[in-house]
Length: 386
Ligand SMILES: Cc1cc2nc3c(=O)[nH]c(=O)nc-3n(C[C@H](O)[C@H](O)[C@H](O)COP(=O)(O)OP(=O)(O)OC[C@H]3O[C@@H](n4cnc5c(N)ncnc54)[C@H](O)[C@@H]3O)c2cc1C
Image 1 (cartoon, rainbow, N blue to C red):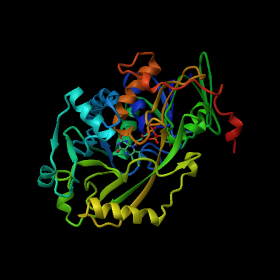
Image 2 (tube, helix red, strand yellow):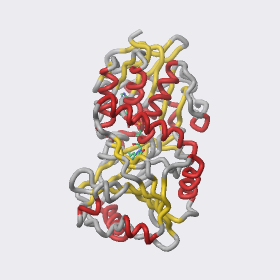
Image 3 (cartoon, helix red, strand yellow):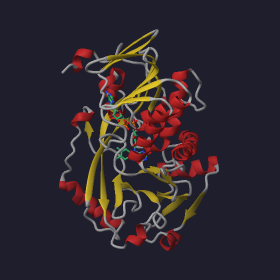
Image 4 (cartoon, protein in one colour):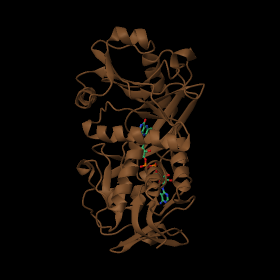
């Protein structure tokens, strides 16, 4: 055996899993086709929202609360600041399904929050102007993470604890049997006891089962320069999500010294595989975004100074798949985080460590079970031979 556990993909989930597995003293070898912290996948673009009043539903809240503890543990272990809790505004009508969930989760879990009237919003956060009938819920335990730095830091901490990370090493095929798993790169193989696949939008290339379950989705982000920077500092401008009949978008404060990042929630295009995701952005998009910025954030210059294209694996329900991989013995996977997985990554790393070491996770994973496979093996190796 080359290690007890192998991980394919040392991105968001894989880096956290490597850290959590290594800290248990279990030998782990993790592969990435690039290097942990790269920005070509789900983890690029400078910032990720962390929030606990969760529009996606209460089943996530225990994971989020555990993730917050583990983010702090990673910071304490490494001395690297990763999570800034500057608050989060959830803006919309209280009848929207997402807002109904937000209000339900704060009640159910006693989350620290305030509900603000339009007048209170103008007084405290003057760049937002609410429309009639809208409310803003201030999630006090929300804020932002630094994704590239977080992945790099978790990977470094995993290595410090003995994990082996093989950079620029793409895994092309998997053979799993009752005694273990063999993974193949272009020029060699490794034999391990258990395998974790955390390949993000590339999962479809590795696990035939995953092809029908989820899609590769492109997400575009834009960076806009404030007219008055003091209105957009982290202290003055919490992260926000705003939804109404015409838009569903989110934003981060000015953390890079010059610009505020804006994203539109949801898919910006579906692609057959990760490599075919279009990196070019049609200027027509930016004209549409200009109207959104002028209407909702008039204190920003309405043309972006930077645009970035990223991707994530997406499921119909928006819920990820987590658990044992059907028809591949000794193999587990996590994929389809549908644009909201980053904040909970350390908790998922802990779950991954439980799964590969035979410990029952402390969370209810039933809503995330991987459906029975429609295929009997991984992708035939010859499909990927150069
Ligand atoms: C633009 C954007 C904004 C987002 N905003 C938020 C947010 O604000 N808050 C939030 O919580 N979530 C957010 N998300 C979602 C979150 O970032 C993703 O759900 C999460 O990063 C996915 O993690 P992952 O580990 O599945 O994939 P990734 O982080 O993409 O990791 C997959 C890794 O696998 C590697 N890999 C793939 N195939 C192979 C192979 N064959 N061999 C070796 N290595 C391989 C890749 O190189 C990559 O490093 C956002 C996503 C995007 C794209």
